[in-house]
Amino acid sequence: MKRRFGLLPADTTQLEELLRTVAAGTADFLGYPVAKDFDYSPLMPFLQFPLNNLGDPFVPSTYSVGTREMEKYVVEFFAKLFRAPANDWWGYVTNGGSEGNLYGLYLARELYPKGMVYYSAATHYSVQKNIHLLNMPGIVIRTLENGEIDYEDLEAMISQHRHLPVIILANIGTTMTEARDDVQRIRRILDRMAVRQHYIHADGALSGSYSAFLPDRPSFDFADGANSIAISGHKFIGSPIPCGVVVAQKSFRDRIARSVAYIGTMDTTITGSRNGHSPLFLWYALKRYGAEGLAARAQAALEVAAYATEKLQAIGIAAWRNPDTLTVVFPAPEEGIRNKWQLASENGWSHIICMPGVTHAHIDTFVAELEATAVIAC
Image 1 (cartoon, rainbow, N blue to C red):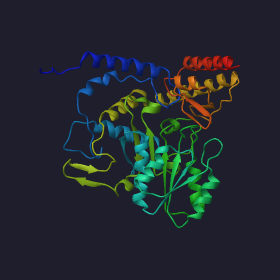
Image 2: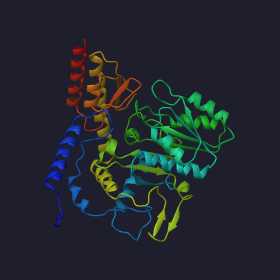
Image 3: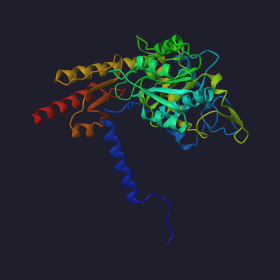
Image 4: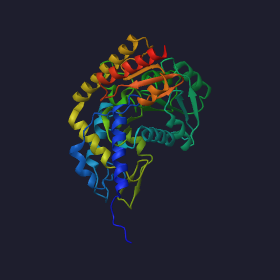
């Protein structure tokens, strides 16, 4: 008997159950840095097409079903926001911050094949994997109490390996405490030590996308000494598909570019075929908000983070956060609370991240449940 194409009733039921599950899970998570207030419904018709931005976004390809113009706009927006050199910037939309970090390290390795990578103990877990994939040596640097890199330890480690070029992986928002490493201070260390061969990549996956809008702008971008910056797009901005943006100096990118006749463009990215939908989502968000709207978005989220800190402290929980960040850290609560709110936890600490979409009502409910749990425990 020939089966007709289409879903069986059990398949439809499974899809319906999945929809209920992800809707409930999205409503009840606070522990991961993912904005959940986006609405891309006007872009749904584009899901009918195989959008593929293969190759270099700035070089046309023989494959024309893509969103290259939108991708170029997104890259230029962030290049200007991150104060990249006017005539020496390039970038592309990635699958996320981890790919952006891999790309920055890849450029650094091609520039300094014998370079040593320095990164703090609070660095995202993907970085150690990336340097392993690239066969690069690395040294882990201690962190300060707030999660920021220990600058004295960094200088001491560089001193012990002065014969090697220096490659720094600076965190602009660590995973647990959202600590930001001071790129300008790192650059001053390198200048004081007369280290000429150096490369600084800034991992801004968590807070790089909004740090430029802070009144007290942290030191993290090209004007401060970075050579490349990676951010996530699905975190502060928001996207239904994980994505990111990497911006680098074009003169460094030129070292790895090669022409590929098959696709009629340049091979300059990590992946060959690249998702053409993510640039469309990011373009839509940037056009919708603009720099002014993103700044207001950041201030609103920061206000929620301040509110959360105060509410937790008011019920006797030792909550704290780094200045001008969306991450609130506190002693890990009991397992039921951690599971319900999907709290990321490490070494006895948990956090909530007040990304756009997290409201005062979410905080009130979370704090009330924490308080009730504490009363029952007593």
